[in-house]
Image (cartoon, rainbow, N blue to C red; front, side):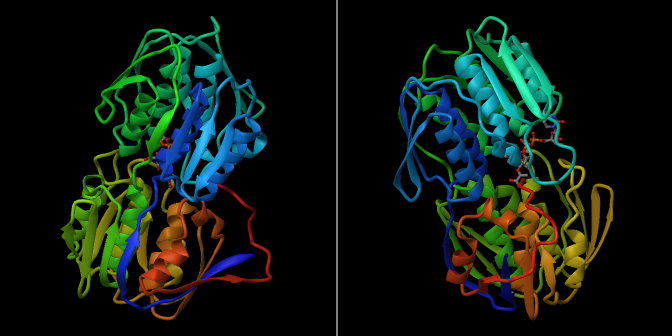
Length: 430
Ligand code: EPU
């Protein structure tokens, strides 16, 4: 198996280029199935979730061609109806095939999505939306089966009981080719929601209001091809900012939209980092120990849950006590026991972590429990004294393109290492 080996204690210095947004890409790629033509999609991150989705789409009959490292042409003219294979049950984003197939063909059968083990992850709001649009939906033997009663979905008014990124995007996919108007109330407002709307509109859809809590979609009969560039990854950028805050240094994080990072950069400033907004890049400089801060995760524009483990790791090195409340997922502190092996002092009670800052972390062998927990272990390893080994790194590869190379470019002593032992637990994707 492959593990990461980090010799910590080096300041980070230089610049890092941010890749396309994972959580936008994993919706926009399935959205190409709605298009009766060819899409050129640029700035696709090279991560394993994307590879799995593209393989599955090719099996489903899409013509997938590589233009260059980050650009793909996806042709779905006269696409036949085919269902995604069982491998799709391993990743969360497979649920977007339900909306895309139901929208295009009026039917779908998709394995129930997997995903990071960060709490109960229901999809009731997705299914409620599709039912409101005239689909019969059942969940049986690990599959979601959905069929539009009249062969084609119709528009509907849908109120989401919880602000859900996945439900908002899935309903947008299903509604793009539905007959009539769909209104999503209490929609999520993340940058990737706007990105999906922009993609659909570039292909001829009529989606308005994305980025607000009310999204209106007027269904069209057909979507045409076109070219689209995915936005930069807000969470990848935040992860490099947090790594610099924890390890110390002076780093230019390039190819970002600073507005998308505001909740993160504001918090890092509160913790004593200097942040300079350069329009399409953010520079971070840190000197001396970090200050404490309290953080509560929330849907956008609140502090993102996908940055919670990384910020907790920074706060574990701050001078005093910080409180972090996880308000999106009910079990996203599992990695804390790994951080404790490195000397972090954190008490978790339900959705709250109380972090007593320590002067230093020390290297240890820890595992990446899930994608963002894995990123947190890397940050801890960079900041710690001594050698840190991180196992189960397939979780990290799901969502971070070339993390090792990018960190080496910032002067970190990090590399992959092949070891003989079997992984303790099997592969479990988020
Ligand atoms: N929820 C429901 N019912 C639903 C859907 C969601 O109760 O039908 C609840 C969830 O249990 C959770 C909350 O609503 O408590 C928010 O869930 P959401 O649907 O927004 O999450 P998601 O779409 O499954 C995406 C990202 C996650 C990220 C969340 C929140 C993808 C593939 N995943 O998940 O990303 O944490 O939004 O921003 O886009 C990650 O990248 O590490 C990751 C876990």
